View (cartoon, one colour):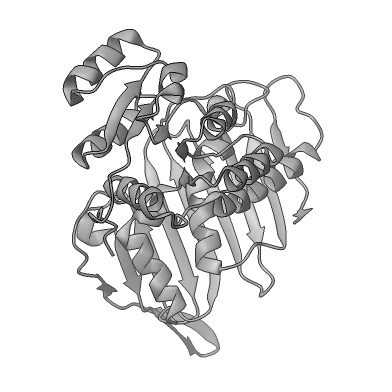
Length: 346
């Protein structure tokens, strides 16, 4: 299961672009894997601190794109900058690992995917849950029929998080869960609709629900909010045989639980017969380290990453459909109103 770096060829040299809240973790893992070439961080005080901590130089984006000793960049800058910076890196011949979302517009993401193919460069998007061993186990359980037919998926991602002004909460929080839902289902939804609330400002959605309908009758809901007073990162998959719950806030051994509850009928009424939760013996690891190592292997051997540009485009297509669904509703009146979208066909 591990994507630890093999030693068949030269290790790629990767510059970490953006060393803020999440970027510093990427830089740390690249350094521990022996692949950190340099860091690029506009906050000079932070840049100096990170440079000293990991023993690598600081560079401007222009400098590292012109540096022939730098093979790739790991991009964790604000989402509004992703499209332009990814394009510049690909044009400079660099491989790219970019945090989600790939872009804030579907057309921009599609153009970047085409450019990466044209330049024959790896373009990998940071959909981190694809490198979480408990999520990989969950997908395996769906594939081998342990849960039966998937009937419904519910994903909640709530946090008193960092507020954004460039993108709404759907684009900031929902990509991880949408990506996992598409992997579980193995297909795109046939219909998407959404509803959202603009609480803090009129033009940015702070709380949203995205609804996905699939051809076989299964459905999914993604609930996201960055103004929740508590954190929740949970995915529940309801199958015809059993229900699986992934809770990323739980302890390692409790992150994935499967409940084989049964429904029986007595006097024509349904009753739930509860069963003990099943746990799985999965070696503990840091998913981000697995993700960074996977990127290094993709660059070294020219193999498509698990979360390649095609996978990113599928996620952007769902987000785009949800956004268009919200756009079909009447515009909010002054007072930060609720927006309820109409269903959008994919």
